[in-house]
Image (cartoon, rainbow, N blue to C red; front, side, top):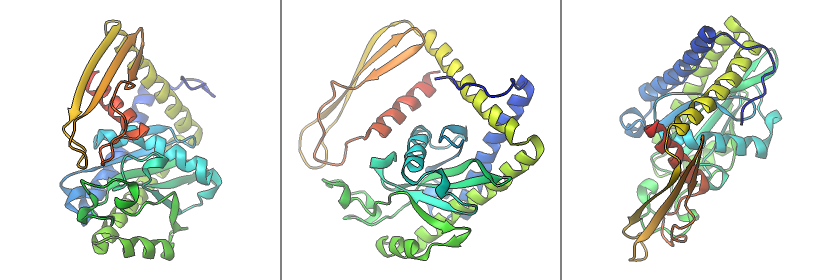
Length: 306
């Protein structure tokens, strides 16, 4: 739904400049991660995404990295805010989580988030989601083709504080590194992720100094409204109707039978409904998708169409 504006409209030129500034903050985060990570998953595979959030957990800035993560990140962020609360974030704090049942895609993908403070209040958040190469579990690399429960897939983290006022929360780090098969690589990749948050925080502080918190907040709300109007207009150009598609996984790694995914797509005016009800039931093996994965895949598909 559209955001209720709290102040007068920002002119289109300024709005475009601020939008591009948000994008470039996220791009610079990605560059920092590529240049400082230990893992080729980051610096060659680019299996990460960088983003900005408002205090409601809405996505207000992103760069062109992994699209599925961009579809899932605000679910993960809002879940984190619901669980720990906005007041849990102090200056210099960094939170992390990788739980698929709390809005993440799958466990190797870790979300790290840092609050950006301005004049003693949280203006918003900078964050990134990245695929950490080894997180424990029953198989090296944490991809077990025959896993039948989430506990076999690695170390699952609820929203946890790993940096407190810029200092290590040492017990959390010790637990994580003790459960990953390649702790040195994890240590390097976590620091690349956190370092990129520090870069982004500096850039957002520069924007706050230039435009002020009220202007940036109003701009982010207007950008959310514009994004909705743009997407609705694109959907409205599609012919109304009901469309069908299906595909299959040949097996789930445990049971030798195909698993069908069936989509019923309804276009009605400026709305689209993706209905997966007719898909097969949950499989025993590791091919199931949480709601967040399904929603993110739908978003990604529409981004490629429009």
